[in-house]
Length: 259
Image 1 (cartoon, helix red, strand yellow):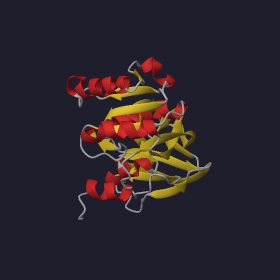
Image 2: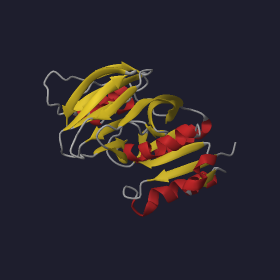
Image 3: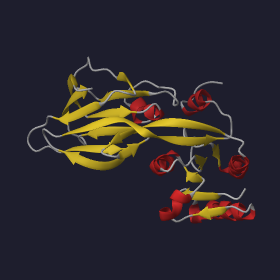
């Protein structure tokens, strides 16, 4: 069956878009229609990401909102979200077209109709900030720290892990709240239910701006007394896996573990 395949490439990793052109020609030879124009991507049966985890994060919202599965081919170092590296890319695409794959469904976070696959971060950009945290309307704590990370299980191996947060199975349904360099030593990460709703309020005076990042991209700024609500989204990112590599094997290799 002929399929429409959206291709999202990282030009800095695919020099001269050489691999993108190779994949495009191969898809045409298989009677598939490749789409490279961003405005037309929503018409795709699959999204093909040629890059790394950062490029996968860029594709996640589009894939989730239009219910399009995403296959990632890694053009950099070992990634958590991508399926295979460049050398095995064409073989992975062939498996995808033949239906020889599994789908992993990853929960996402939502702030003001914006989606994040990895995390929502409230940060002072080098300044110590104070954040009042409520869970389901109940005051949990006011934390002084460099920032606060609200992470999905998928994002637990990203910034959350660097800040000392726990590693979660990527297919689980939980939310992690981790402070970045907290002022109080008693402050520790919280693991919450995916049904919990978090409100993060800036309680910083002197016109100090606090920045909200979603998957590493600045989305908005809030001032003293303003807040954002973070909750799990109705949308999920569907990630295609053809290689059959277990998450814990990837994790061991990524963290430099022994065989």
